[in-house]
Image 1 (tube, rainbow, N blue to C red):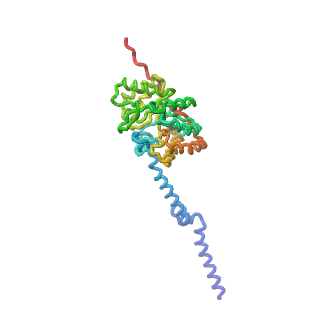
Image 2 (image 1 turned 135 degrees about the vertical axis):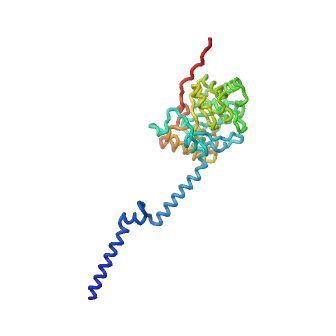
Image 3 (image 1 turned 60 degrees about the vertical axis):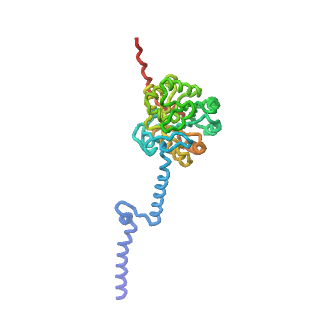
Length: 347
């Protein structure tokens, strides 16, 4: 009798275990414990997953201030504070910097979707003409760079001569009056100048940078927003067969629009590399540049011969090349509008 009762008890226990333990052994049972359609993680894994999410969020939050592009101020004392400018998301021109805006940014032949060929990156180094020292560092990068030289600085002739010997692409970095009251340097074009004064000053600046194939503005938010002044300045470029790169130091810049209306080949910068000169910020802007180049097919960045910028480029350019990015001069990314019609001649 005792053995019979024991056998019944063991059988009942086995039946109970089979009906409950299987819940833990089947995917359905696991899913059921974790909630509809989700898999419950063991406590250790769940904690680590949450920690990774928090780290990623913290990293993104820390990087956000460095992605502002045109929202900060230049490192050089007395230089113009960069103003936000409307542009497509991630163009370095919108409210809050690189991620804002609703305008249009232009690159020759580039689409808003990934290009079929390699993503193209153009690097412009501004504010040259004060020293020869940084040229060797830039040439050691081994990629095409466009060099923007201020026309009336202490070593402008020597810098231009060195660049011409290497057959580099040179821009006249045309100093123009900012709204901020900063000093744009010698030979600057001013808002109060007559059209003839603007014309003669532009001609003098171009003559001081022989071999320049184009012009970009140094500062200039007070002039670049004035269609009349820009028509006079860019009319000189049209006569000389030079292109215009709008540095976009102002949200109200009309430089690109006026240039193309006059038949002047033109482009706009998308990223300022070192508006915040700290190394981490420069590196973040460089990554933003690569993102834009990948999604659009090409992008233009402006930087300066600061130590942090040169060091970041030395580290990041080879990595970008290894990933397939192709570095080009700005002239490879221009929009070439139809030539403006000649004015009618009177009889």
